[in-house]
Length: 337
Image 1 (spheres, rainbow, N blue to C red):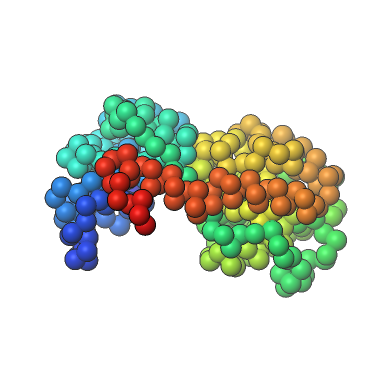
Image 2: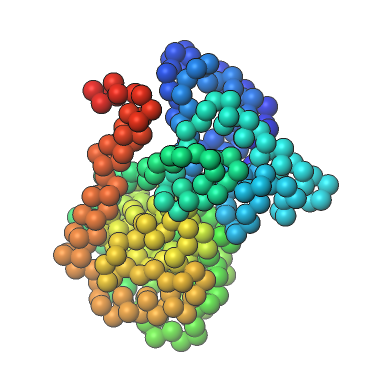
């Protein structure tokens, strides 16, 4: 639960004080209602992109099926009884801010926009545009991961399955559950190595060949790891979009993921990419086996995956979408940039 009632103040740059528009993204956890009121100049148009449900809840950053945000987050089920009303106060602060500042919400996925339209804060907003994230142009299929494979002692003939999370132990990302559900004697295991990116470690079955890479940050470092993979898997129980899925596909790597939240919008509808029912690990392993039997990604498949991502999430494509949002609210001059 991340509170919007924090009292932290930040000294703003003089250019912000002259702004005609301010676009907010993720401010979770470092500033609150009072601090934002200080920063944003009077009369400035406020755009705010939701990358998770926090923008319209009483403090949640992950959607778990609780819909109390539709009615003000009364009786929050995740807080202890003694402080349960805090979520309602937090929700009220966001509602006041949205009304006072006439906030124009923006969603990072169609799924997120639909969720926002159910909220008591933005449910009456007629226009919630969708502007998905940009995929850094560094993520490309050209090149190979032989050097990184050698660094980890992975033989060239091994089939590498990649998984990632900021924290490997994060239950919402499902990596621990994935390996706990892995069937004993799963047929492809004899030639499979799992490459796991993220902080921390989890217990692993003794029969599973694996490498923990630790937390990997920076596009160029991530690129090397993606190129060392033959397929990327996301067993996450909830994603508002699925940025890692897009990055892997931009590198020409097919993906298998649970169909949850915004992931259907982030997975290419080609035969080598699979979405399976959320939580159905048996179906996920079946999909993985089918992709492994297809062999390593061909140059044609890798190029097709990259083109699909670039056509939807390249910098120019997303910039035009964002400029269109500003223009609909009177900022026509931005077209000259």
